[in-house]
Length: 103
Image (cartoon, rainbow, N blue to C red; front, side):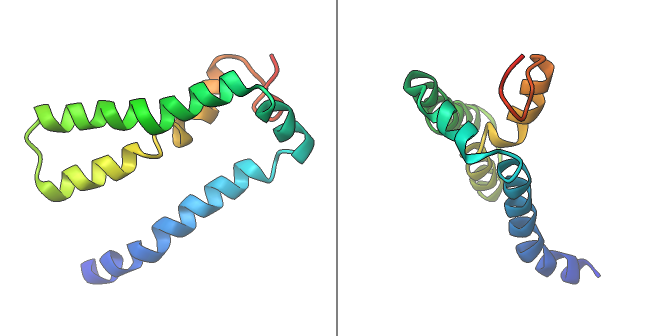
């Protein structure tokens, strides 16, 4: 049973990630996405936070903590998508409308 689950994860994990992205992306109108992409300073800050600062923070944490090489690799890969799982919840906690980005 363990081997079956272990082999199934290689298919289940990408399906989960793609389905989650589609769930969020398909709820948006292209015009709403275009409006937010016009705010270049915000877009650049979010890109830097997600693809520079979060992985850098993870690299520092992995340097300071004793993890096995395989776990280090997994955590580093996970940090490259740092904001994706949490942005929806953070937006809701900030009392913004997740669909439109408005309060």
